[in-house]
Length: 185
View 1 (cartoon, rainbow, N blue to C red):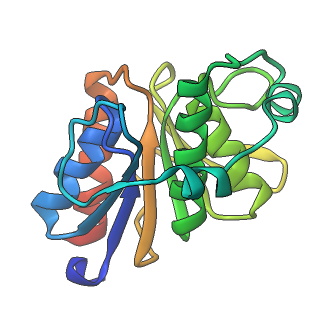
View 2: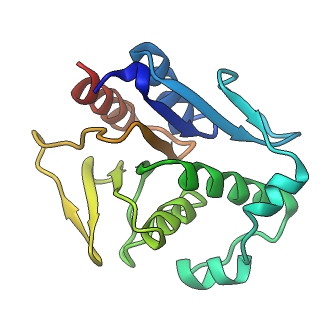
């Protein structure tokens, strides 16, 4: 696949999103980073500040998300805006790559988990690099399928999303780098 025909959709936040952005830039992939006024971003390349009306388009019921994810989320306006930008990231991407940790209930830890659940609901190809287990997983049907060490995912769609934890381990960083190398070498 020609990287010049591709677009990474992300959020530009510290951690996994910044790492996805750096790898995209290095590979020659365009990027769009959805954010909002008052949010700190590491990535300025492709920064797309959503106005209040656009954020409203990505609004979701925090009660519904809390029930779906088996946990309580903050009701604060900042957290709501973060979830709204994640809606844009997942909505725009044709396949989704997440760096995080898959929990026993098959959800992904933290706010990133909403992006993974939304990808499942939209039936989009979803891959999670589980930093705790140091393995790539693919959502298939209703289960996570572990990918073999030598069979990590490859980006196969021109519009893809890269998101994840603000706490990025060395193995998470290497997983993102490996994804781009497999896909665009």
